[in-house]
Amino acid sequence: MKQVVTFGEIMMRLSPPLNYRFAQASGLEITYGGGDANVGASLAGLGVPAAHVTCFPDNDLGRAAARQFRALGVNMDATVYEGDRLGLYFLEVGAGMRPSKVVYDRANSAFAHLDPAKFNWDKILRDAGWLHWTGITPAISATAAEATRQAIAAARRRGLTVSADVNYRRNLWQYGQTAQAVMSELVRGCDVVVCSENDAEDLFGIVPEPGADHKFVSVARQVMARFPQIKQVITTRRTTHSASHNGLQGICYDGRQLLETVTHEINPIVDRIGGGDAFMAGFIYGSLAYEHPRQALNFGVAASALKHTIHGDINLVTVAEVEEIMQGNTSGRLMR
Image 1 (cartoon, rainbow, N blue to C red):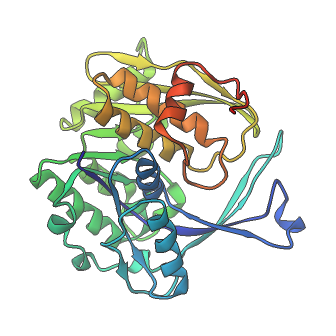
Image 2 (image 1 turned 90 degrees about the vertical axis):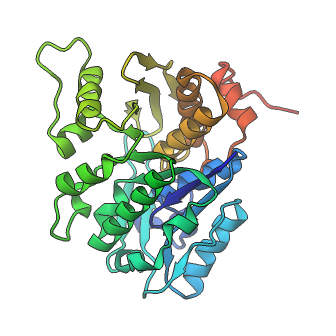
């Protein structure tokens, strides 16, 4: 199986223990994560060769972050070490009617000031079969957007599958270029995109056609018509009963048919951060391991459901555990 390469920022995550509020905390737990890197680490845990490309400050924090991902089986050899600081984010985990809260402290991170010339993409992608990125990466800075463009161009030259979670974060786009212009250029090089109806409207001005029988299908068809390279549009449907109880379903349109999974009821939720990344990693694994996209979609949403039961950004599960959920074994019965 060829390597899957991911590209994006990794941040330090600082969180009070349990469900404590920031005001109650006397200490913070440290983990590391980032949308693209979470996909790579999850894939490594599923047995897929995975490499992540990023930029860290050349200090103890950058080295610690790289070490954690190496320990999870991710190849970090293409890491560039330069710049002044590691991006941070703080998470307060909610419960019941109280939602979780995230506070970012990532301005002027090493990744935001990366030099695109430091990444030799033809060399990095030499042993790869798949490149994955998210819309967060080009939102961080003009140089990060340029590096993403170069990565996609190299992947296209080499015949790789390219996927993206467009993941529109309005508040990140602060460097003078619009998300609509930048993302339209980058998405043209993708084969698979995670894109909800809201993302399609915000980024591409695409809305469901009047009288459409199925809004997602209408939007997906228009996305595929505008970006002909795209072969699959996928997303999840989340039903929020409370911060501790969600329903989750996967949806895929491939130009011919709409595929939908069962809805997984997740109760209680331990940690929902990284759930979308777990879905993408599961879909990539399923696309590589199974013959039918329905199986890939089922694996993706089952993997995401399991992620909600695990602390931290990364989905620390095995293929066998995900396949148990796919088969409907969701009782959580003690295994001896």
